[in-house]
Amino acid sequence: MTTETPTSTEAAAPIPHDDYVHGYSVAETRRLGDQADTLAELLHAGTAYPAGSRVLEAGCGVGAQTVHLLAASPGVRLTAADLSAASLDQARARVAAQAPAADVTWHHGDLHRLPFPDGSFDHVFLCFVLEHLPDPAAGLAALRRVLRPGGTITVIEGDHGSAFFHPETPAARRTVDHLVGLQARAGGDGLLGRRLHPLLTEAGFTRVAVRPRTVYADDARPALVEGFTRRTFVAMVEAVRADALAAGLTSREDFDRGIAELRRAAEPGGTFHYTFFKAVAVRP
Image (cartoon, rainbow, N blue to C red; front, side):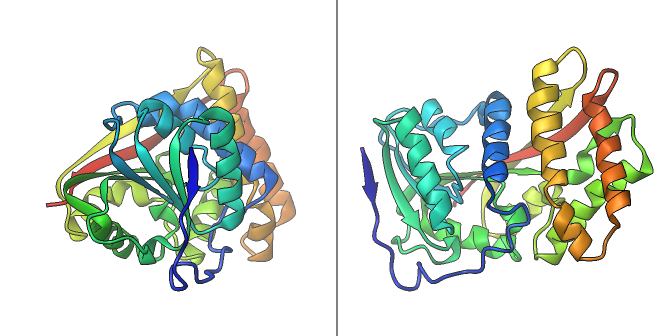
């Protein structure tokens, strides 16, 4: 059963969406789904909440991770929150199709100004959210407020600096660096995964445990080559072409050559490595 949470005027105040470096296109929605489905076992392994638990998914986006969260924790009382009303509409549709019996409350608003009382949730989950915040420590502090004492927070982030691939060329590496640079210009951090432990500690959480979750794809792992190397990572970098050109970071010829050479990691004889970081911490 799906319900709707009314939002306060403050919580629903419009926030610019162009800080999301990947955009809100149909292609991005598809990429997020491909990424979530390909990496579900890797990223969600070990995350399961007891039935009846009050769980907040902060920054649920189009629901790509939401359906996997619900599948691993049947019977939870999930509140899925996001800044984008359009993304929430897509998340509702995805959950209705894949988990129609789930107990989900949808909230449209800024995670820094959630209208819930202190200690409203037993667990908080967020995936690929902090990397887009200008002040991730402040975001974590806001989430800490709505988490009950003894409750857990689970955070998953990537780190584009961990992308190693073969064959690697300077042009291919520069296209990845353009993505990192554009995200920094928007106030985010594409290298945030390596900072999870100090960020959670700074926000007042204890018992912080960070574990790497590594993806490696080669000819022996064709599903990962297609689902992650080609349809997740290369697609993510390729999608910032227009922004990189508009920012004067590169020329059309250089960017297109870099993408063509990056794609070789998904071709026969190519390899690709990337590390995600998953942290679990406790509100004291």
